[in-house]
Length: 299
Image (cartoon, rainbow, N blue to C red):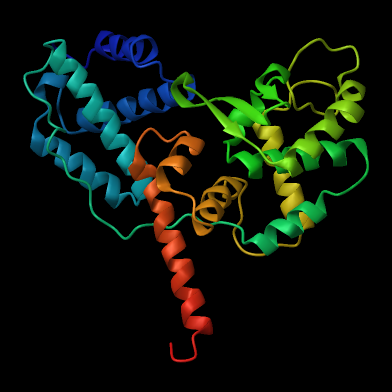
């Protein structure tokens, strides 16, 4: 192998698609991460994947931090390259995995931001408009908060995925994994009003089964959902740096604050690993600490 092989990259991408069943969104990130790494190694005078050693991997990681990449972005790039070289090692195209022993810098845990219950009430009030789009927006907000699903998952929901008899939702998550998530009476009522009074009107002559529609009757995209949520947040006059994913954080945090167990929340969120869910325990502990410090007479 005289140069960085496009064939090796192509085989890895095919492996991610077929064997790992990764989404196209994730695969696109992996491809870009590998391309960036190749550019860096080429600038260092290396010509092939088999030339990359542990010291080169460490140099690349140092460069990532020097460029002030967010810890999560750097971690994704390192994870991608570790998986890539593990694949090359399996295919006998390299003799070692230079990223196998690379350790990320340890930093303080970045706690996910969430809405307090009072703030959620302000959001619901902001989309209580009795118009057709107002009823759609309320159903959208109620379902997102009731289930904790991702915006991308919400965009893919079809009518057949909603079981109104048992108030459960079939969610197709990352890696095409499916899970059932229950929802409560507020979301149930809002959904029924939306479907019975609004959806057919918005659908018009369109023919599809997607649950949430835009004003032209087409499926509401993830980008469209984020736009709607940002408008609701703005209308609620909430301050600070706020983003729609905070609804998912709020779902998990409020469940744990009210006594839900970690494994249940993990399953509801669709997390593959419990460690992804455990970050919310830090949020709830911090919430308890602040409450104690504010209200205990001898804190």
